[in-house]
Amino acid sequence: MSEAGTGSHEQQIYWNQLVLVKVVANYVRRYRDEQAYWISRIGLFKAIVTSSTIGAWAIWKDYAFVWGVLLGAAQVLDAAKDYIPQTKHRRNASEFVAALENIFIDARFEWHGIFSGRYPPDDIMERWRKLAKLLNEIETKHFPDGLPSKESRQKLAEGEAQAYFASTYGVGGSNNG
Image (cartoon, rainbow, N blue to C red):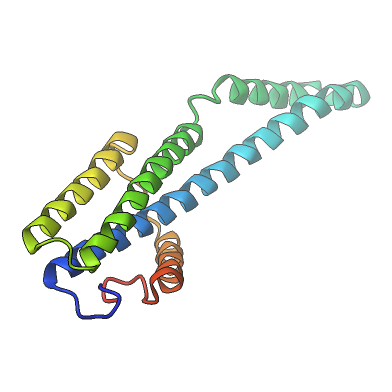
């Protein structure tokens, strides 16, 4: 939405896309952080098991089988770390967020020209198309199967975007302004 609320239909469409880009960036950033949480938990499990099993085995030799199984599980997790979905998803999310933030920087700069009336409606729609296409391309590249949906993550991402737009432009980040 235009800052003064008097924008054209085309300005509104571009504004909505700008808001969407910010919401998606926030959503994927939260998703990335959730993946990192699980990766760190797996790492902590491996560290505890590998360092404590040998000592525990020496003290409680009667449970050698249990310690062997735990140590084996830790070794399997270590060998499979590059194939655990969270590792791949975190890497993809990090790359996606970096690319999206660069797009958002350019889109914010472009918004100032759109808001000030520098572009006629057809040019605004062409700029909107390019922005929407870029979002689609990087999402398809980094998440070809799509992102898992989570309502709580979505609400938090929308709230963060709304706060960002309110502090930056003086209007909320909802599609209605």
